[in-house]
Image 1 (tube, helix red, strand yellow):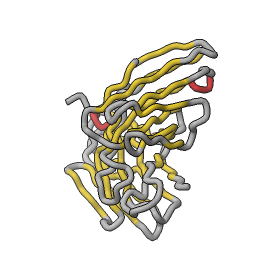
Image 2 (image 1 turned 90 degrees about the horizontal axis):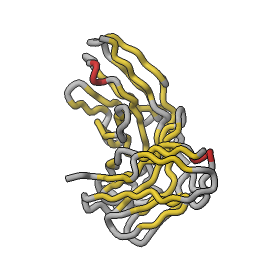
Image 3 (image 1 turned 90 degrees about the vertical axis):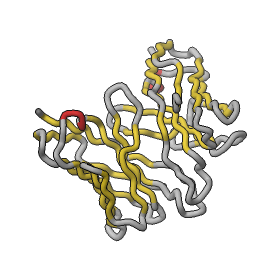
Length: 116
Length: 117
């Protein structure tokens, strides 16, 4: 089955700085990689996703990059703000293969703290 | 539009007691999921239901049972609760897990915080 490793487990940055969270996956069949943000006391919420036929995707201050050859993908948050403080999860699945389990395998999470 | 609703929000059980966690979605999604979240472990899939009438085991199914009551509702039952089942439980739903190309974005509820003493 798929195995997703996520680093770092905790990350502290000064407000306005950039934050980068990295994930690696093991199953070459995985082709869809979402990122979820979980605020305290709430359920995870999708913030950005990328499919394997795309190398990079941006949405305002957040971006995700994917390197299929190396089997790793990263979340980049620029100009961080205190409201970015949360736990971030990466995930992988073979959602678009036409076969397979389609289950999401999550990384263990990164707690991001943005210091004002 | 409430999305995914879980009840109860908090629960304390004694070892050996049983309970059912309820989940309902109003997005007309075909697929639903139950996860548990433990510190340092991320989210682990317990059971999922690809469509009404079907259920399948995930990564950590032992000690749990599920029922897909109808398209909207997916319940998780603990028959004899154990302290190891102390966790936060999340229900999620997505458009259609089995259809290639379909949007497989999972939408999560707010969670049920369960303590087993």
